[in-house]
Image (cartoon, rainbow, N blue to C red; front, side, top):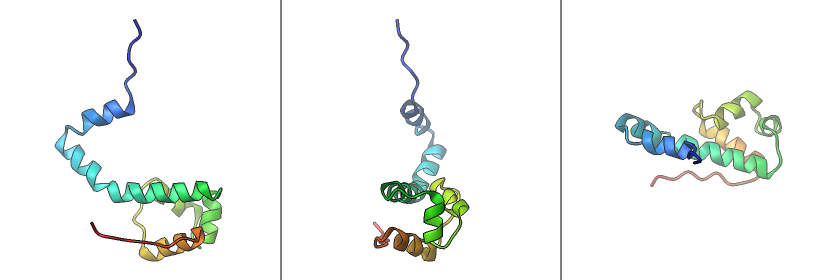
Length: 94
């Protein structure tokens, strides 16, 4: 009989039962959404991290850190990234 594979979704479902993990997970939502948007726009425009960095007047390492969610991004840099993508930057509170 085939054994069911333990997936990332299974692990997440189990991990989210831990209140401390759940708080940390929920606290990272903004960084996750920002990272997702940068990656999505970059790939849609067929840009490398280096090309985006050059257009946004930063370094490839900074773009990498944004995409890996390991840095805090300034509004100024977000504006430059939006300009590099030729899109509007929108920030909102919900």
